[in-house]
Length: 242
Ligand SMILES: *Cc1c(COP(=O)(O)O)cnc(C)c1O
Image 1 (tube, rainbow, N blue to C red):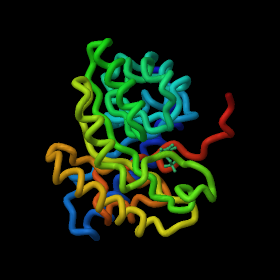
Image 2: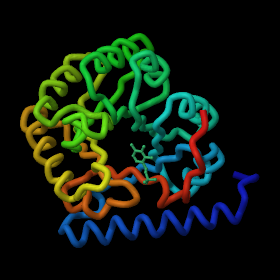
Image 3: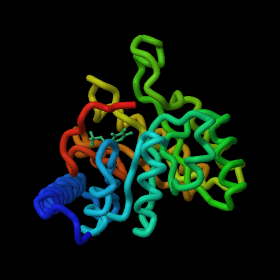
Image 4: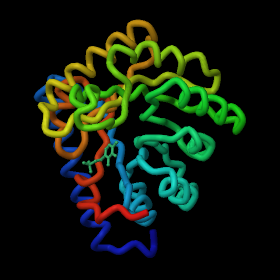
């Protein structure tokens, strides 16, 4: 931390303070205890130095959406003891790499991926918590916009069972991204229904990963336990290269 840019530290500190205040206000409005909602800092496109700043400010959970960026960043900051969340679409051939540093994979959307992660985690002697990613975008399920990731809500329970049968995987719950242009509140309500059905069968699967910078309030109102915040904490992202 001795080399951290003081202006950047102050900016991130203020952003973090404001984001925590938003979560708290949303919880109070929804009659929920703020301790029920965890913040995951999504650091994609931002340098490892920002991860260090976040950690110095008390952030314990960080998220990334591309393995080629996440793997070196996690290695560079391994001394911080952070919990790493993988939140992006994941190809099976990246399962070995992701299983080597991630603690939680939010984007399990097919049985083949659950199996690959289970086998890779087992081989590495690691345990992964996995969330079933649910597709809340009816247009993309109908093939109108194209896939945004996630299993059809009707198939989520079946996929949860595929995660559960892997010894090295723990079923944590569900994750979703609100559909573009839709009503996030309606989408998150649907996610809550799926989350409840899964938790009825698997009592430990209590995580509901929902809500980003633009829609964290409606996610908290609909039962999110984990919000994934990038822009709110670190500012706008430049164009994604590579
Ligand atoms: C980038 C990303 C986020 C954070 O988005 P912001 O709008 O910057 O808060 C959350 N979840 C996923 C899956 C992401 O890819």
